Image 1 (spheres, protein in one colour):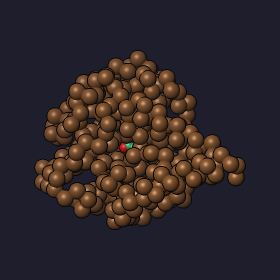
Image 2 (cartoon, protein in one colour; image 1 turned 180 degrees about the vertical axis):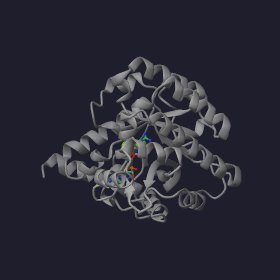
Image 3 (cartoon, protein in one colour; image 1 turned 90 degrees about the vertical axis):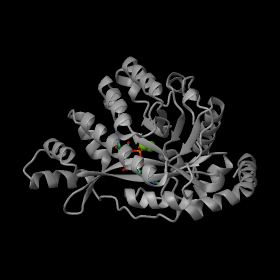
Image 4 (cartoon, helix red, strand yellow; image 1 turned 60 degrees about the vertical axis):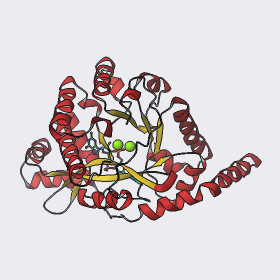
Length: 330
Ligand code: C2E
Ligand code: MG
Ligand code: MG
């Protein structure tokens, strides 16, 4: 290890000492919900095998599943490092077959994107998530930030109307909804994407940039997109403890977020070492298997209730970097 690396490690660990209390609190709260969710050994093959057994094409089978409400949502908690509070949830689509096997969302979301079903899938996910969490709010005043993934192919004026209607019908507060996009939205139809994002912001919804650090990660995108939060991709988090350069990139993203006034969340935190490194780098928000796996709605709600009691949760973000967002802050 070079002198510079030793010095960096020393600084990291001395910062950690001061943050150790918060990190420990976070772990104690998070591990309350460790639900094992086994990965399918070969998700693509399980899907094709199932479709063959039903004599349906994979697209027709997926269309049935969406129409017949065979999909469900799991929710993964997000934590603020300071104080170890659980304040947000990411809704993640799940498809369990009657056999008990599951089809990975990466498989069926991609198929939906390729076969014109992504609009229907996305509308269902948004409606289901907002309905579920709006009911928690009505019944028990629990109101986390709710994050919903929006695929690049979903971006359309039609989705903007779906968003407005869903907020109105479910009564879910727009300022508590965060739509997760990826930089891919600027690749196909950049003008349409910017128009739609501006419309979301007018509705008062927050926007995060998911999987940041993969793909092109153009810094120019960050200046163009009205982003409130950056989510550092889990591949960087997984590599940073073994790769000095990756750790430097993660640290740079965290500091960039602070300069832009965007919140930064690290995804895919699986080990205490990763958590302690992130604390040392000044990261403020984390999500990952170490703290909690995605869980069914009832379990996620129980964890939220245990962490928050019945108090409404104050907004966790710093002022948003987009000009319009601050007027919608809680
Ligand atoms: P994503 O939006 O980046 O979601 C995070 C993924 O990382 C989830 O995988 C989550 O289960 C997984 N994850 C969370 N913590 C950890 C960890 O500590 N280690 C590891 N190895 N993984 C972790 P999942 O649920 O399989 O979803 C994969 C991707 O599928 C999502 O990535 C998102 O791009 C897409 N997806 C899932 N649900 C939806 C949806 O409702 N709509 C759209 N458009 N895409 C979705
Ligand atoms: Mg996401
Ligand atoms: Mg992600």
